[in-house]
Structure formats: C-alpha cells, structure tokens
Amino acid sequence: MGIPAAGRLQWNELTPVVSYANRYEGLPGSSFGPRYIMDYQFILVIAGYGTVNIQSKTYEAKPGDLFYYGPFVVHTFTADEDKPFILYGIHFSWQAQLPARGGVKEIRVIDLDDSGAVEAIPNTMLIEGEKEEDALLIQDKQSHHLERIESRFARIVELYLMDYDYIPLLLRSLFLELVISIKQGVQLPHLGRSTGSPLVRLVAENLHKHAQEKYDRAWLEAWTSYHPDYISRLFRKETGLTPYDYFMKEKLAVVKYWLIQTDEPLVRLAERCNAASIHAFTKWFKEQTGLPPGKYRQWSRMI
Image (tube, rainbow, N blue to C red):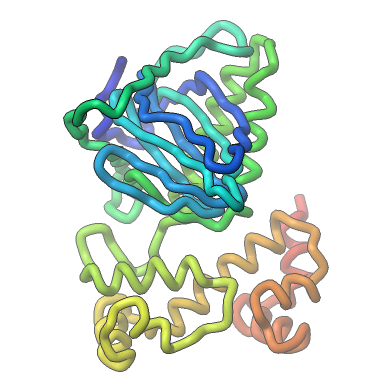
C-alpha cells in the first residue's frame, strides 16, 4: 500500500502512478459516500456547488476547490440542489511501479453506512525539498485559480482511457506537472511555513484568491475582524510588503499566466483583472515587467 494517509516525501522520491481518472457531473442533490478508497485521490470542482465531508470536517465546495484524501479516509460528496457540481477526479499512488500498459484499471471503493463513527485518520501529505520554501503541504482542501490546473486534470482524464504502452509514463509526467502547479498555486511569497501569524496567513491566502478583483481595503477587517490599520502593520512587519503590494504581486502573477497560457485579447484580460482601461493595464504591466503585455506574450512563446 505504500505510505499511510498522512505522509512525508522528498520531491525526488515521487514516483506517482495514476490508477483512475474521470469527469463527474452531479445531478441535483446526488451524492457519493460515505465511503473510503484504498489509494489517494484529488477531486477538483470545475463548476457548480455542493457539500463535502472529509471525516469530521464539512466544507462548502465551489469552483477552484481541490480536495485530497488517502486510504481509509471516509468522505462524502453531495451536489447542490440548484447548481450541482461538476468534478474531475484522479485516483493515484505517490510511489508505485508503472503498469505495463494504459487503459482502465480496477480500483477499490468501500461504501459505508451511517450507523457508526469511524476513527479519524491523519490526512496530509508533506512534500519537502532542500529549502523550506520548496515544501508543499497538501491537506483536505485548497483553493486555486481554475486556469492554473483545470487543463492538467482534463488532459489526465483524456489520456487515462488510452491503452498504449507509453500512457502510464505519460500520465506520471502529467501528474508531476499537476503537483508542481498545485505547489505554485499555494506558494505565498515572503511567507515560510514556520513563520507568519495565522492572521497574516489568512489575509495572504484571501488576497491570492481575490487577485482578479479590484483591491478593497475593507477586506482586511471583513476577513479578520481587526481594524485595517492594525492588519496592514502586522502584515508588513511579517512579510515586508503592505497587503496592497502583496495583492498586486498576486495579480501580476495571474496576468502573466493568462498571457502565457491563453490567447485571450488584451482588452479582455484588462477587464478580467479589473483594470480601469486597456491603457492603464498596459502601463501598469510594463512598469512591473519592463515589457508591454503583448510583447511579454510574444517573448514567452519564442524558442
């Protein structure tokens, strides 16, 4: 079976194998679980809403939410009555031998009843590197920009059904890319895992989630119940950046990703990041990168 649900590995120890992958469209109010599986699973919400129970914790599921659990971790997913979720799911092992060929593999799913409590199991994976900032901690739930990881889930689901000798190796490669994308999506500049107060981490995570929007100082109080001045001072003390400066760095990272990974017109990207105009958008981007956005896109695709 390999490592237990709560585990610790080095990046160079990862030899993942994808054992199942699919796209699931929930019907209104439909559910699966309570159940547990005998491998590991990522589930990404790409549309709609629902409720997720992982052991004793309950989460509201929305687009961009990524859920994780390992062997024997009891879980239930229930689709919303009005806007049921659409999910991508990947079953995998963190360390395993590659199968000889691709194609559908049998997976073990154990359905449970609601008659009794089940002992909770630690449900985290810590992937470590030589430096502390290289580490990735995966827990029950994380939130991401869909454009960062949805295409990778879709590609894995597409290739999983193909029965060729090279497919298991290709799926391993794509899965490693997915995990690295997850790492890049949760990485908080200037915030090590062992530093930063819970308040600062909360603010940083929310600034990351709202990076497409227009900055609103009132968020600081809404998220923490503290006066914005106090949160701003605390945030700057621990990160070296004001909340606004941190927010703008997150916004820049999102815009760079759009420019590299999509062909959307610049006018549309300016609208998506709530810039006042295409001219303001272009000026701001050039001040930050030294290149206008169109040139940056062209430069990023040169060989």
